[in-house]
Image (cartoon, rainbow, N blue to C red; front, side, top):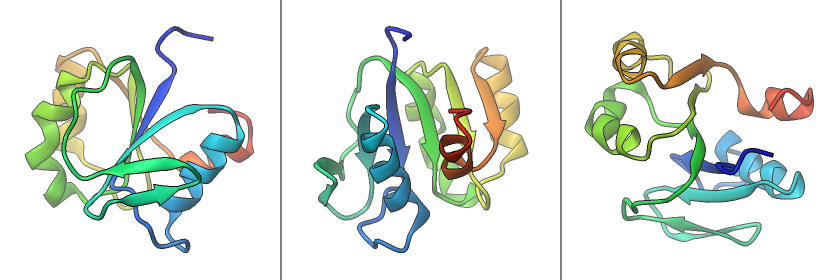
Length: 122
């Protein structure tokens, strides 16, 4: 496994019916190293939800769960983490951010993290 193997779930929700919540559980069960950022602090499957932007190290993947209008405020932060890739889940598609990521040589994909995990493509 890559030395950079941590996933940041960006836009994590404490509501069990939310996909971001399910993804954290699935990542944990898959043995992935997970950190999470959301608006409300709490824990999901032992993963604390940070409500402050932290300078995480070794982020491989940022999986987004915030809409494109809200993403703009976080472009610089996400880029500063130097992830290998950013996953745009359904409803988070953002061509403006794709272009910025391309300029910074950061890979991105438009996909559903839950589907990637369930089909062993994560």
